[in-house]
Image (cartoon, rainbow, N blue to C red; front, side, top):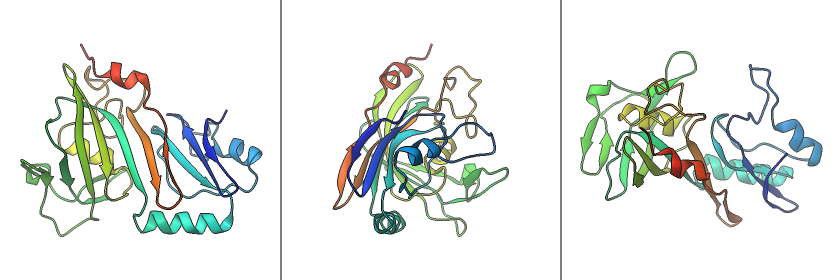
Length: 224
C-alpha cells in the first residue's frame, strides 16, 4: 500500500517505508514500482533512493515534469532534510559542517577520498584536504542526546550516493542499524532498521512536503 502525501496531475509524493526497494534489485524481493505503476500508469522516476531509508519520495506523472525535476535535482535546487539516530554523543550547540569528498570504494561502497587520520575536526565541523573524489558536503545539528546515541538533523548540500551514511561513519558517529558503514552487532548500533529518514523535501516553485519522523526514532536513542 502506498502512503500518499500529495498528488496532482503532474506529481505524486509518497512516504516510502524503510526496507522497501523502489525498483527491482538483486535480492529479488518485491519492490514498490509495480504498485505505483499499477495505480499511476504514467509514473516516472526522478531520483535515487536507498532501500533502507524511509523518506519523502517524489514521482513525476508527466514527461515534462520528469525533465523539470531531473533538472532541479541535477542543479541541487531541491532541499532535503533528514533525521538519523547515530552512535555516540554527537556534539551539540550549533549546526556543524561535514566537508569530506567521496570516492568509490570496494563492493559498491563509498569512502572518503583520504585517510581517516587526515580528517580534521574543528569547532565548525570536519574537513579534509584532498585532490581526489567528488565534492561532498553535509550540515548536521543535534536534536537530542541519549545515553549512548544521538538524534540528529542532516541537510545534505550535495547529493552523492550514500553521502550521509559515509560522512557520519567516518567521523565516528555511524548511523544506527547501518550494516554497510557501521557495526550493527555493537549494542549502541544495533537496531531493527537503518535509522535514517528523509522527513522533508522542498521543491522550489512546486511545494514543500513532510513525512512525519517515526515515533520509534525518539525512543531509539535510549540505548542501554
